[in-house]
Amino acid sequence: MTFVQQRADGSGHRAVHAMRSIAVLTLLFGVVVATSWLPFGRRAFGGAPEAVLASAWPLVYGPLVLLTAGIGFGYAQRRRPTWRRAAGVVIGAWLGELVVLSLAGGLLANEIGPLNAWFYWLLATGGPLQPAAGLLGVLVALGTRRA
Image (cartoon, rainbow, N blue to C red):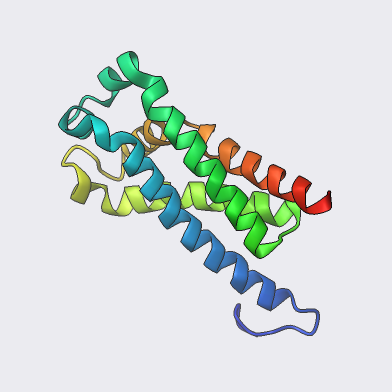
C-alpha cells in the first residue's frame, strides 16, 4: 500500500490532508516572514539582519506573530483538526520553511547556503516564536469552536 492510498480506517486520507496542509502553511508562513522583514529592505536581506533586530525587533516580530496567529486560526476554523494534528501541521510547516530555505536560500541571498540556512531561519522566524503564534491561533479557534 502506498502512502496516498485510502486505508479502511481513513488514515491514508487524513495523512494526505495533513501533507497538503503542511505545504500550504509552509508557503503562507514564508510569505509572513517575507512580509515582516520587507520594510527593512536591503539592510535585512543584504547581510545584516542582526543589526535590524537589535534596533527594531518589535517591528519585525510583531507583524510576524499577528499574521501567523491569524493563519493558525484560519487553518483551524477551516479544517477543524484535533489539537494533536494541528500541532503537527503547524510545526511541520515551520520546519518546512527550513527545508525550503536550505534548498533555495541561495536564490534569496548569496550568503545563505545549506550549511548556514538554519541560522537565518531562526532569525527570520524568531525561533519558536512563529510556531508558538500559529499554535496560539489554533487554540483560540478550537476554543471558539467548543463555545
